[in-house]
Image 1 (cartoon, rainbow, N blue to C red):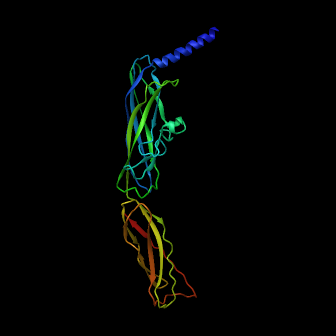
Image 2: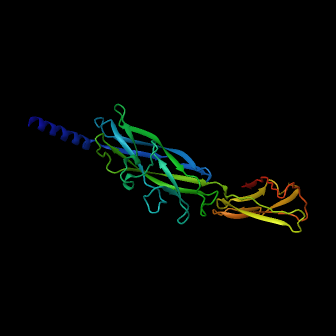
Image 3: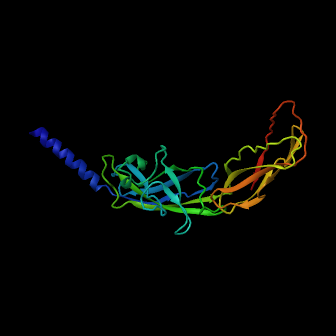
Length: 298
């Protein structure tokens, strides 16, 4: 019975010690992220955080735990869901991005992530000697996947999000040391650059021809180009004429320029051979080909 009574007393004293410790935080800063987003490559960046907290007495524990969460930003719909999103205005497109902890895990608030404690940035805050204040700092990551070319995303425009974050302090045993979390917020700014891709490649243009035929031989093939909205671009071929088996041909694009809409735009390449050409063929049927290059400039 004496042993049991002593253990109970020690446990009660330890709990009382945690409760008596008094801590507060005076500053918590998270650096903003400002990135240039090219839909062809995506974007990656890093940010940093720093905070300062104090204890009321040198008898308060010198080593405590801290944790930081992020709240999903202002453009989530519904709120508090992953991934976070940057947007412009109330009705424009939302482009998803991911914040990550210093260990590479997705950084968000565990209350809407199934209670995953790895979702928070965590570490130790140490008070040196008799100091009543201590500061800690670290980093977080930002990544945004490639390929987000949608009609509402305008080239040359900044898309933003404001992310809230909570700082918490705990004793080594896990007791909360702040009456309420200390709050901060930071801004994510993504500038979308002009970008174009050939989203559907042109196929082969097949021209059938009989020596000295009286009519022109024609053939056409189509292709699609996707550009961020507002991107002005031009189309050209490396050559618009050539010769195969002593048969002259010409090529023509359906348009030489356009402006991106965020969705695929269709064009065509037409090929033709004028009538009356003899050509050169030593067999009943001959075939020849050469490659041409389609150039997109923006």
